[in-house]
Length: 190
Image (cartoon, rainbow, N blue to C red; front, top):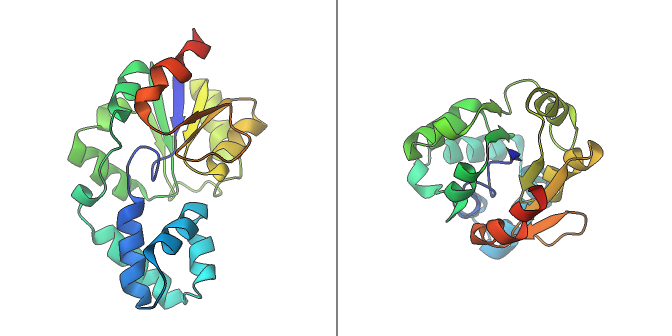
């Protein structure tokens, strides 16, 4: 099985660190749960919701990049899925240097045949350009993401989709925990 992965919130549990970073920056009465919910839609959505200035956005990005990879751990059992797949690729809005730093910290760089990062020049999701490129090169069977915008490009291409920790309508499969992969998703590809 060839899997296209989103990075933040799908492979790595980065949103708690993002939430804490934004919470400190906003210095307001906004609850962390509300920040988390808005970030899960998208960073630009959260920035707009909270009226962040360009300076605020730059501060957030600088502070988030400075966080140790230890604060951005992989989700439990996701490594088993990576090992199960015959090919793994990543499409993320995160910069290549940030992706590489986290993958190298956890020793996971060898699991991925290719990474399309935010600074590679492709339009942002849900534009399908990066998915088209990855699908043509790697013949993707499944796209896994934590947000609807992660699966929309795959759906346009007829690729099966899986939402992780998100029950929005439209995905072919849903996982709350990667332990479920072996019996919920994998049998569909035999």
